[in-house]
Length: 118
Image (cartoon, rainbow, N blue to C red; front, top):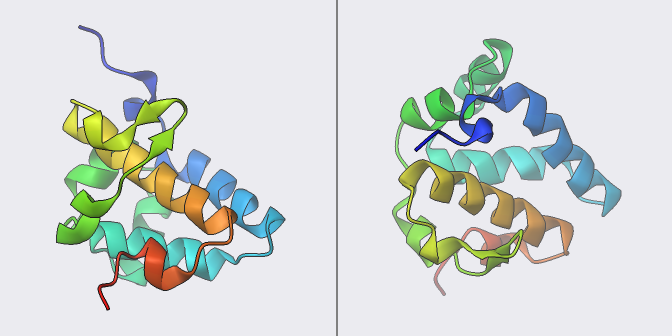
């Protein structure tokens, strides 16, 4: 089965779209970065390096220091697909990120987006 085109797409090409989506809803680039760091374990310098080096989504997630264990708590629909039911592990990580950015753009509180327990 052929790979999805998104796997080979440069993360740096999609990242500005995440930021624009958030900023259109009065959220910030810093909040987008916080979400990405929470999900992937990158620090800010590591995230910047991935963007500068033009890593594709496959490499971006393969080189991520550690996926957040609470990422399994991310549930919902993105592009008509339930993120918790996505079979391909890489596609699921991409959908998790999409879902988190959607939640940010919809005005959800950061504690809820980052699945912080009370």
